[in-house]
Length: 294
Image (cartoon, rainbow, N blue to C red):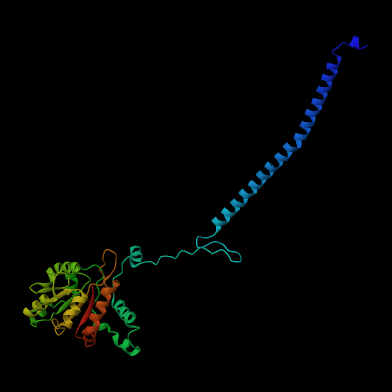
């Protein structure tokens, strides 16, 4: 029987046996490797899930930071800081006047200015003494006059008055304005009114006070035009006196490039009040000086 099968039968069986064993071994190896692959895939899924949650948390934190005001970060137990309210800009004189028509000044405007300025500097009795009678004022400019036409209206007997004036270091008409340039402009406008009368420039720019004092003492000056600061300084130095003064004309209605009047500029307003309080108001009370708002 062994001869019939041949000498190679054991090889085939052995071979088949070996092949089955190897297949079983290989199958077993495959079965053993499958769980390892599954276990390797599971951590990868967990990593992806954790990455997504981290990204989501970061996005939430960024949104919370953006919602917090720039003053500081939110802390536990503290409410988020509220944004500051923008303050409304106060309207300046220029803003108000740019949208409204200018109104001519009147005696009541000057009276109100005096009371407001001295309200915290004087007693009630002293404030009452500052009030001027209607007879202390000339008619006000209605914004239709030039300086010459206004002076002709309020001072119709000028030719006679200028001839009678012979005192040195004094003037009959004192015109108060805000600047040196405005002083020069007003003196030019006086041409048709003053006639042979002499006018003096009384401002500080480029002119020393000693030169102005010598000019006033040298000859008779009828009209003085200048700024309240320099006029007050000349009065303090006794280079200018108020003995012959009859008309005080205030350049009340004129406005500069910023639409400010003379009394709207703080430093000029201070000098102006000092000038009025330096003897002019007292002269008005005695009916020696009259005030006109040009």
